[in-house]
Image (cartoon, rainbow, N blue to C red; front, side, top):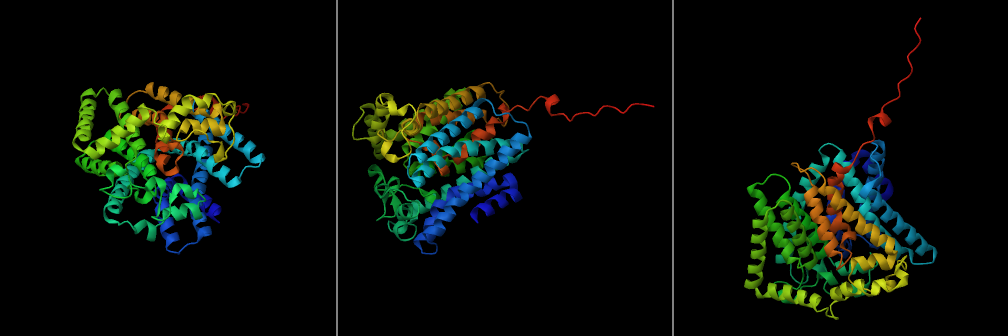
Length: 448
């Protein structure tokens, strides 16, 4: 029923269904646990609700792929590499399933690595539809600003019992989504990632996660919104207010990886635009912030110290060290060791996630896709409305933050980023030569 409804919706709305996809992705992990905790929906109904956005995206992907085929947009360049990446992961996953691995666990992993190609394709198709990509990105920016306000309200005005009593994300993740109970804090109603940072315990026992149900997903989604507000479109005074709201919401998510992503991305845009003075001013502002607020400086410098000293108790440091040493000494990583979580020997590394599950071809094609796309955007002419610089910025941020986890495979967190990359690739797409698509002319009828 869900499949039929999703395909009929795409048939009726076509690419306009992307608005519904974004709305579901950014709110489902809040409203579905809310309904489940209240007893309005059971586990089976909740699982069906989860599938709505998955199937809707798949239907949009099929429609977009057909559009690109009809418009004679060749499968070449970076898009060809991304297709190879998804196809290789599917092939390796199929081998794992044939060897008897758990189909539910394998399905979750395969779904996550398939999302980039699906969303990228939808973004490219939207960009070829006159005006749709620009409208969608403006709508996305405004929506993220509204959700940032909602996140601040939930962070500031909900007490410690709210999540446990009314929207128990922890129990929902275990009982409905089948996630590991060790990664949840069911007694307080959040996932382990939602627990507050000790340096900021005076503010809240939780990290802001708003309607995303997860602070990491919210952090990356808001980072894209901030980049679009700051660097895309004409400046207006209202943008300053929206930027402030979104940056405060990003800050109280206390998501270091999203902070790093935004920092690298913003610096990339400013360097491309030769705004060295503004870049220096922002760097000085961050230094002043770190020196004036002890909790912030302690949080930042303790994190850096653990990475620099390779603290064995810090999973991010262990993952960074493990990927550049142990990952290349394990022959099983040549073609991957399957989709079972038990094969993961290196924690908190997105690159290790690829090589341990899918092998060297997945890692190489993923990195090559980003590098090729970055270089391609550099060759695009600079013009008003060109998203190439912001797309390049997100690529730089992705390649850096992949060292600390597999963030690009987060559905809600990276949905907008993959869509942006697809939209920006419009300038790289080439139609077939006119003579190959012109209708054939019938021979003239003989005279007389």
